[in-house]
Amino acid sequence: MNVAFHTTQLDDADVLQRLGEGLEPLVAVRQVVERGAVAVARIDLKGSLVNACVFERSGLRTYVAYNPQAIERATVFSDGTQICVPPGETVRRIVEDPCGLPADLNSDRRVNGADLAILLNEWGPCEVSCVADLDGDGLMEVITGSHIQEWDGTLRCTTDLRDGWPAVADLDGDGDGEIVVSGSSAIHIFDHNCGLIDAWALEDDGRGGPPTIADYDGDGVPEIGLPSKLFYATYELDGTLKWTTPVNDDSSNCTGSSVFDFEEDGYAEVVYADEVDLWIISGYSGRPLLRYAGHSSGTDNEYPLIVDVDGDGETEILHAGNFGLYVLGSIDGWAPSRPVWNQHAYWLTNINDDLTIPSPTPQNWPEYNSFRSGDLRVNAGQGARLVDAKPFVHDICEIECEDGTVQVALSPNNEGLADAVDGVNLAIYAEQTDGSRVLKEALSAEDLHRAGYATEGVVLELAMTDIPTGTLILVADDDGTGTGVIEECDETNNEVRLEDLCVED
Image 1 (tube, rainbow, N blue to C red):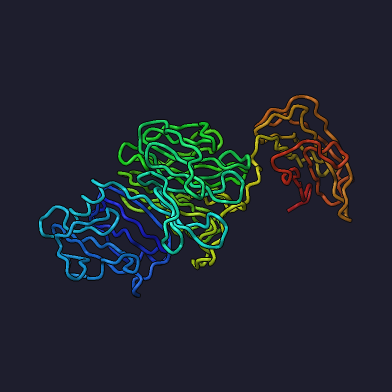
Image 2 (image 1 turned 90 degrees about the horizontal axis):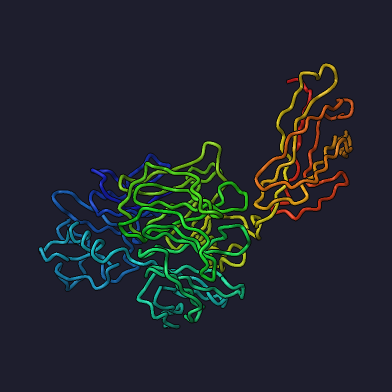
């Protein structure tokens, strides 16, 4: 795994490094500006795909990796006093594209770190375009905030916006991609021919960061989320505000976010970092679930990545701040994710795990229908506002095993977001030697079973002669007939097996 990022306030720390191989430095950035961003990819500095420009300021060198095939102007590698100068031009050339390589912006006849600071601080962060097959013709379109181009560079249409951060998904279920554009204190939605579908202002006067599209509330329909100056906000596709949560980003007020279902419960969580904290936020309610106070950033348009950094089958959060790169994980382990997050305008089908690019690149919908989301599971509304019936075991008492009995304290549990109006039944079966089941108890419920609660436990005392294999099977939403009656958000988690009862170690 290789990681590339830029940041600030590092005091001679290397910031473009190779993870997993002793933090071998690839390119050292000594002094840049108060910004930070991160991308995960394999970087080859030996071939012609990546060259380096050198800035020098007060004896400190700044190295910037770039792809010379992607830009026409940068071809010369110099000794540090002037860099990336095309033939026939001087270092006094002012850059025409604020997202291109810097030249002598402060007219001191030197190209150095001061010019890079001017570039990023005065023009601000550069919007990131994306490429997708909007209309399903097998050919990719180039999408910006201001226009759409065909694969050959032909202009398809314009949006009448100056620019912005585009994100793409099928928002109306017609099979074609729609474009969500942010970055002008508002959200605009366009069809694949730049026709305006809807637009609304943000909740504060901030610029607004790159949009994330995902099923935030588990209802099977995507929502739009983004941070701004004072709030992170999520919206339904018609602009209805779902929730806001306070953030602190007075710097750029245009950072991004990612989305992932860490607990695999059908409800996505938002991962976002402002100037002072990194947050994991409930996608359903907007309630903060985790705060990491070790983060600090001057903020640009960076956002945390969801990636399996160490290949252990569990996801980690990868991010960069003022003091370098850091990785966060869970002691108990989070759900598995991919080992790659290759670009800012990321979606799940635009790159393979081996870093090859699928050609033609498949649309991200209808299978995932997300943008800047790491969720690998196809979400068909598993987290919708429904009941989720599960057995709950309070305790198992085996001190009377010598007398041939075992005691089990149990109850049905409702882990969904809707109340079970008629309660949740629970059946207890004993597994037989031939694999069949024999009903031992059926606990019926007639009272309201509220969302997120277990009922009062019931203690059952069972004879081990009735449990020939030492295994009990508890089934929620089962009245003893083997069938369920409740529509649940997850029908696969109704059973719990209690094995090796009264079996000595």
